[in-house]
Image (tube, rainbow, N blue to C red):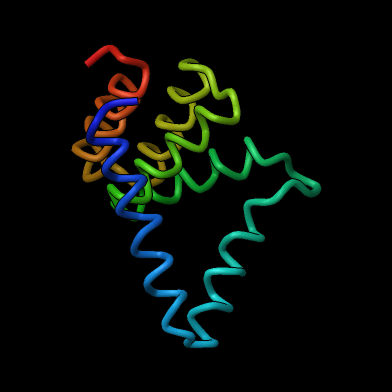
Length: 115
């Protein structure tokens, strides 16, 4: 994993701990809801992470895209599966998602050590 992705993960974990450590019940509940949504159920984790990736691309959240690319890769998502998910995001989100699609592919390449 690249230094940028390590830094991304460390920052995310540190800030999540800081936010959750503040003790706000509503924030804790939302974080728990988010975590539980991606657990194995009628849909497998890999499918849910791909859905999260598509939604993140359509919503144009690069941090979320990075997170879901890493999680999808951990779940064994292949390059061809990523391309199909990227295509769904492009069809749903339109051309405005193209810059985020570029960064998503760059992140995937970085994760795979191709950058």
